[in-house]
Image (tube, rainbow, N blue to C red; front, side, top):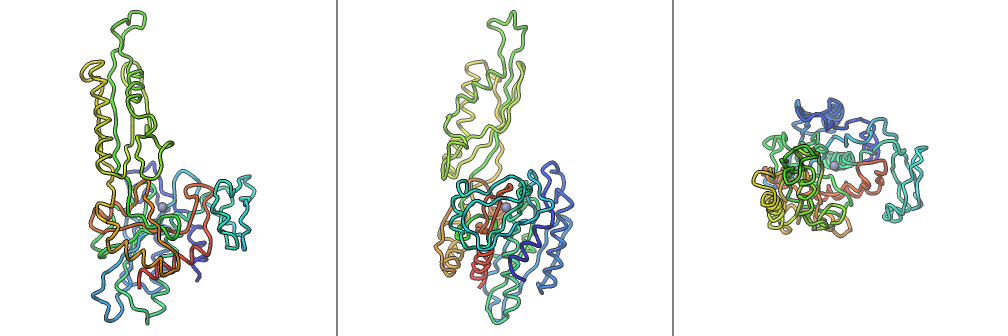
Length: 403
Ligand SMILES: [Zn+2]
């Protein structure tokens, strides 16, 4: 089976996670449809130790070839769920052979995949382009990753003359809602290090993520009749706005890129009596990140000095840390990926992730895990697309890493 056929099989399985259910893993029962499909396929292909659990994780491995038992065991991971907030059911992939590099009408949806919005489209000229029909996601995030890992493993299983160490594979649920790595059984995975295959361009290596925390700010006001409020009323909603004005106005998501961190106001509510602001705080650099947390606290101190002690209260919670603390530019997993990409005839690039990855969590749990590309673009919406050529190239890179 080609990697493209395999990919097209997977995207037809509806496996969106459910962001409204954070009490169970998997968050949606339908994720088991992917787990079960992969379980059968891994058995059929001849994986060893194929195992699925009650949380929709599926594991399997390929033993080291003879004489290679002392080599390091490398793990590969991709996630089985797709995003919950755009339809993922009845995916009808639209295939354009010998693509001309211009705009593509997505079915009869009225949506257009435009080369103005996605300038890289011109570079895909001549390839076999796979898009949606405009009504759903494609699911290349992350079924492209799964297809590439499975096809690379199939290649090893069919070519027993090619030497490799032990390969461990784990597909996991609920990445899109942030629970993907938590219940992964690292003893079962049993690897020295690993890779998530869940990024963009095939030559990308990500080993830096944000440091991340959330901050809740509670404002207590003094509510009195507005007619007799002079010098008495403290309107909590107005104080909340004042609080936000104490933060640097240009350090927000819409005005930052690359290594620039930000404060993002995600939610606010308020009355005269009380108000609440929710922020997420992000920065790649751990010192600057700490400074950002301190800025939130100083803003609260300033409010308290203006309106009295106890007016503003801050609660900060750590979410995840930059995995570059665990995986450096010169670490073995990064070097190995770089060599594999170069062997495939392209130059590796290092792109800092403006977010987190399952690999960041895994890295801090003891499995160093940089992230690799899938070759897909426009994730998380109807404009998601990929080409057969990228699926094949990434499969080749994975085989290079394995061998
Ligand atoms: Zn993903």
